[in-house]
Image (cartoon, rainbow, N blue to C red; front, side, top):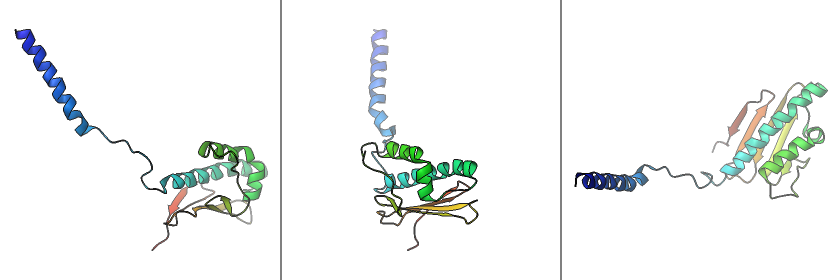
Length: 147
């Protein structure tokens, strides 16, 4: 009789814990926090990729490269970024105009001596006017216009 009481108590304890568990479970995020968040992640990823692509330019050619030259020298590396972030869009490619991808604007200025650069990637579809910035230091800043 005593063993039945212990088993019954254990079963009731497990049932009670099973009922209480959902209160403490965390809800996993279902998607980006904001609608534009995924595009912002892409802008940051693109900026990191450009920073990384500039490193071999400086070491091999002695100066940083403008966007058209970077496209020519680092085609495989830049296309690898496209493949990772846009795997279902096989016809997508970078442009050498200021709108390098649909909805993304790029401004890449190389200093006159070639020893520095300033770069901005802006999401043209973001209602807040989001842009990410970097330079030869590799540090990335994010910004929105003051309203």
